[in-house]
Length: 250
Length: 307
Image (cartoon, rainbow over all chains, first blue to last red; front, side, top):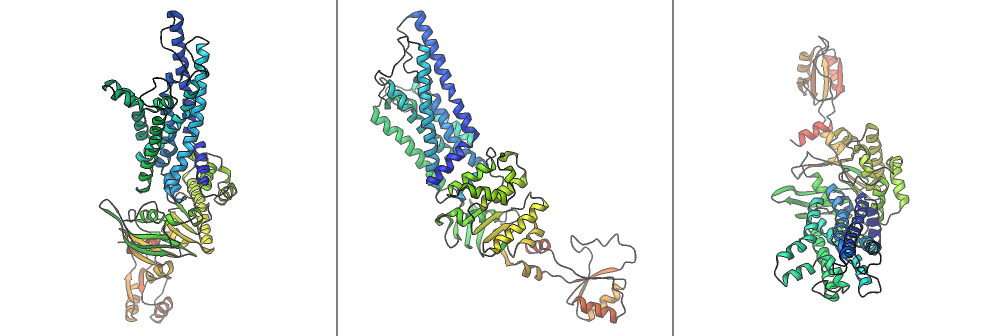
């Protein structure tokens, strides 16, 4: 298993898509910076009473799960589209350990990168807010935990992406499925009656990460339920993936 | 050692391999022949555990691929050299494969040198020629120094030097006691490389014989050119031989047309040795301008067998 993790880590590092995805996460910083700037501008002209910036994470929260999900997609979709998966599978004992190794590697990379991005986002937002009373500080309730749970959300998204790519065995297919899965709830909730809309929107990964941190008004669930649901994403992804890879000809 | 037992593989209602049974023994190179779609690649994929057999089984060293404790050190494979991710360097590609089997960088350097890619190790595979990719594929198969090698058309895209290198490599690997199974459509190369031949058609076993035996079976006589062909053929028939005009013989032979006029007719004689034919010609006063054993090429034999 350690050997497989070393192998998958090297594969991920030697894949250019990995770096493109990681570079793209900086777009979350840009979006938060821009949104924090316009909110600050509103505050300066209209005074308090408008929207708050807070930690700044929620301003760009939809971006990291999509991008880290792509990281998970690319970790295996390239092997399927080139056929290299056959070579990989001839060198290993059991297929599910390969998936476990891939999942561990993408989850670890996404967690670390997602966490770094969360801190960077927080710092960017506070720098733009520049002391106006619409920001947040780590002394406040849930501000630090909100930042600290973001990495977990990124890791879950990466495993989901890996699962979709393994089941669909196609890069475009997996990317489309990923975006649909992650973004459709936020669209659908507008058309659903209460309390369905709240439940559906509470099931998205960014929302679950906030509920995990017990951020006020983050969603319908508490931290423990949010943990279970996030784990559920991982378990369902890994199960479907294992069934798919074990029972199909490569 | 590879054992294929009553192997059948269906894809939907298509029968790709049908009740196939053969052994691939260690210490020799076994050639795997068949037309496109005959089931060679399918059989190799089943042996390697990539595709599940519909019925029957395929064993490597007595067990199924899934049950090999250390697969890389027991079996190495090259199925399609194009199936690699082009963005990686050759070194990173092999290194990732090696790590999975607990094999170190030193071995990666070794195999890159062995296949002649040491100079291109740090280059991206996307820029590799077909031949370089073949060499990389062979390098990957050799990583674990396995006792069993399964190579699907490894000679494709190699230049004449490369083909000769591959032949020497495969023969030396077999001489070390390894099991080598390779498929190829290059018949001349196969007849030079393989000790044994397994020929399949439409998923069924057609022939499983040593290369020498197979070719001996198709040894088709002696080619005789004589200005007195008609007279000579009578004499030869009288001696019990079968004689036919050797026109349109085979590929690789000099064409009969275009010869200088009066060069004599060609005969294809079976049932008599060259010496006997020469003696009969002398006894009958017939001049003989050419008297050669006509060897059937593997290509001809293959075409005849698989028809």
